[in-house]
Image (cartoon, rainbow, N blue to C red; front, top):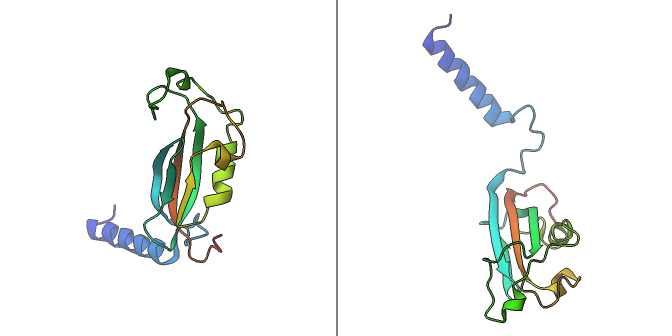
Length: 144
């Protein structure tokens, strides 16, 4: 059995090695996650901005939902017929669109609308966009 001081020394040495040279399974140390699973919600007809704290950080889109899957979010001031469920026809379309427009940028603003997504979805129904994203250090990544 090792003495407590030996264990502390081993732990300190391993900690220093991992800090200095990276974990063996981490091949790219420049893409540190600074903010994980941030959520942004935008109602149809408004602007939505996704942003990271620093200019050296970039957006990484994890998921996105464009449509209506509940009757409590983004309640319109308009007639009740606008409050219908509206599932996305192509669930991954919103993710692909946002990755194309925003991925790697420190900030990204866009209108929450059918026009932005270039595909009409449930005309006359009030929809919303929910985005989950990370902010990652992008130095040396050749960010877009």
